[in-house]
Length: 324
Image (cartoon, rainbow, N blue to C red; front, side, top):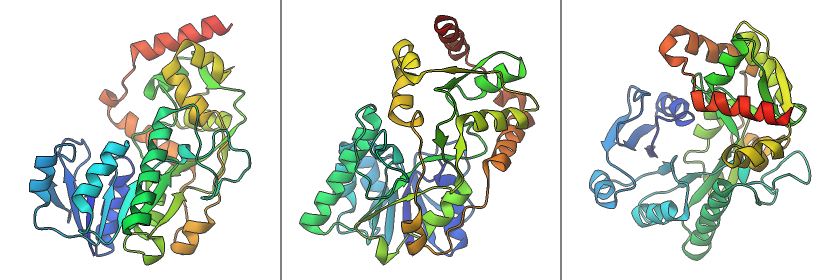
């Protein structure tokens, strides 16, 4: 198969690209070459900017694709650009949506692909929903061959699972209190990008995936208390957890609050039966206890990666002081 990734070097796609190549896929990456993650061996790079129509058309001239994946589409305008560029030129178009598009908070668990899409708290999620609706309309009217993939919280060795990143680990190591939104008992799903890739690559060129939507997540469920404790253990310390209601955080910092109330504050348990039917070999094998050690090993291997955000650190102190 001849496949195009728009992006291809991000947190999630950086695992999908090498796996696709190992499966014999002729992989092209359209990007600007600005990612700190390297291009995998065997990938062909088309230098272009998907946000610049002239640049993208020049880079894509003369190509047709078995599948195109847009890893960096976030608004209906981005999808319209994709339709203009790829309609009639690809056998499959995969849009990377988000599991945060599902009903928030969910009325029932586990979440399935038929769970209604509705997020009144987060504009990011509403934009993803609008993108999905645009693709569905293009299929109904013109049979544009879309597939929708909704990742949940997917990480690699560079990504800590909480807001504030390494600043939170720095606080843990200094014995300072760290904020756990809510009471820490809501259930969350963390998926290693290498596990995600197993399910995703199996959808490329898969005829059963046309005009379908899938989420791809781990079957491991953890509370936020467990997540903080696993990271602290991997960092060689303990977490001095202070539980702060998400709406209190939102009242002090609306930006942080939107991501909590629109996503992380609510339990997220997923039924992965649909993707397992489409890709029988999809099995997640990396628990977060292993992933947390991988993350901390990456940060500790190079001190320059251990960046503390003074503003985020001060905000956490401010929230803790006002909450008390």
